Image 1 (cartoon, rainbow, N blue to C red):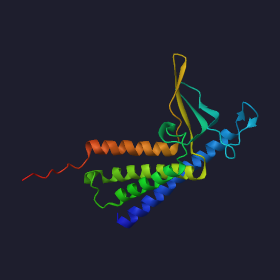
Image 2 (spheres, helix red, strand yellow):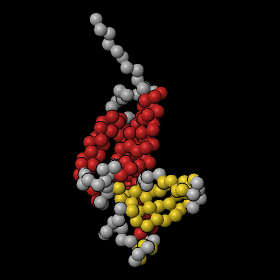
Image 3 (cartoon, rainbow, N blue to C red):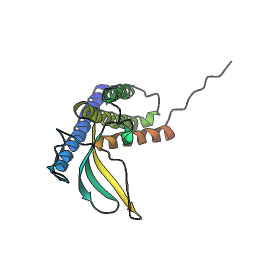
Length: 195
């Protein structure tokens, strides 16, 4: 495949994945916003978003899955959410996206063996599209819209994994692929002999 076709495929896939993430957030937030509030009827999540709104149970088994309307103003697991760092996070996402695109455009990636170029580029695509999806949320909303809540009940206690979204899944999957490639397909480092 020529470089031009490869770049075009990357761009189309990036847009498709980002739109899929944004669409899933919009659909679920609309679904969850119709759930009654314990106080006064349906929430208006877009005009006056709560940090964590009502929920919509999907699987009531153990482990379970439910959709929560949640805005994450921080980073992973809500860290630094109490600070007003919205534009810092947007800038960070833009810089990270630029680095990922630069790595993708390298004709011969310096980090992995030739046989691993395709999965390396897929991993970069996943991380880049997840970063853009979350960055778009930061730009238009009070924070990243998270909605997937997974839990496990053990000894009558409910343990929740932090709420996440589709873009987070892209990022985590891409990072796992990158870690595996680094472990098993990394280019050996050539050490220069000291004379």
